[in-house]
Image (cartoon, rainbow, N blue to C red; front, side):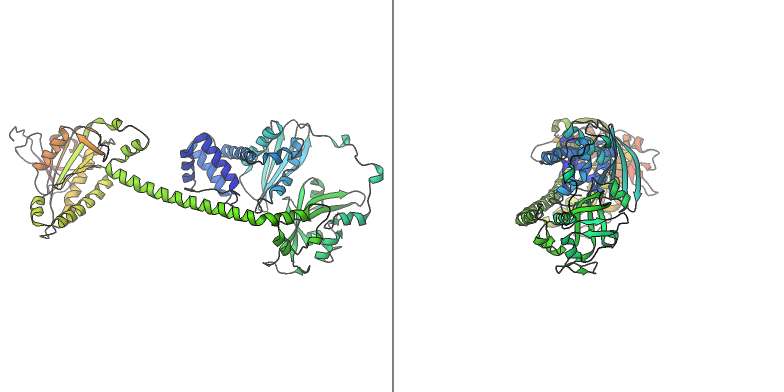
Length: 605
């Protein structure tokens, strides 16, 4: 499919739902950062994926309804590009438009040479509508066609159409859908009401004149045997008289079986016949089926039954786009008819081909650069988000990105777990080690701890200069199990700290941890370097728990003990300790004691 179809979808989805929703749809369809270009060809499945993603993301229509909407979008979009002119003059009535859809596809083939258009055939017709047969190599686009048929009727002919699917089937890899179109068919006339438009004296012409007017025509009978061909075609293909037309040519369009009955039924439809063999510039048949220097002759025209001869004449011309195409086909300028525009079209196409190709190349290159820039933009956006999330909680950062006032991030929490961790002997190590050794050691420890915090989905509140590491659970995202999360994290901190070394002595490092649960106030502080901070006695108490803890131990308060009791932790009574505030406990997940507390209160400092 050409990019024009996808551009129409993009335009109207953005217009109706917004840029952000379109980006979500692209990502859901696996097309992130995709930039559609008018003359680029894309896989058919992309449109079905977009319809499915629209249904998943927008949720206001089904996939088939979105496909029908896409068809409507395409008609409206083409009208904005000037294609409405050719659609408006395609027929006097809507029935004329339906009978000429295939002809319209042929008209735009020169602008879109890789077009793989479907076939539309009006099978029966009456005053109340018609039966339309849609044949295509594509599967699943019936709803898309319905949207196009309805919009063309409404926009260009002011006709309301009801479309129903009568039958859908597959034959030899082609998909056939039969529609019933109900509308006021005011252009319809029964056969017995049609008047003869030719007087008696002009009813017949001689065969010589006929074949001179149509140098590429083919006349064959009801046995599909060729009886005569035009002079130019005979020169190119040699002796083909009395051979089967099905042996010399294959039917490309319409997508029906090449039989006598079908030919009589579809005389208003444009036919395309392709020569079975290649023809070189010397007008000799080539047996090679994969020749790259030549191109099979393609004939386009109408199959017309001639009652006087009781035969069908294929009134056609070669389908060529430029001089190179003409040379590969084995044609010369004098082969073309002087009585139509074949010669002028070839020369005109050659005159503009170079300029058009240059512009297309420029557009393709610009689209490629846009796609690359979008990818780079996305990479830097992710880097910026990563940096932002390292400064504050992800949920807070998202709120700020959505335009929320920072003051609105301030709120109170009734139950939050706060933990402080301190590297024992850090002060003494600072006195002995160089600044670089200290920074390197602390950096290694905190990077190690940061990974553990991310795994438990907790929040690292701040890192103080004297090797104190602070973590909170249940803020800003409320978590019912925040106490268990922080306790397990604290236990893991103790284990991992033992694997780290003092840069001078080479001894294993030890951590000292304190933990408390209580209420806090939190919010974003500062503008130049904003930081999400916690405030309240809970923070002070947790800090005291750490200060009065011991190396390799986790000192917890009474509220922590109450929250963790019966949750798989081993808690050991510590005894009486002089602490400014609070109570403390000893906790472990194994027989080895890890956390401890005191149950008595002391006002001593």
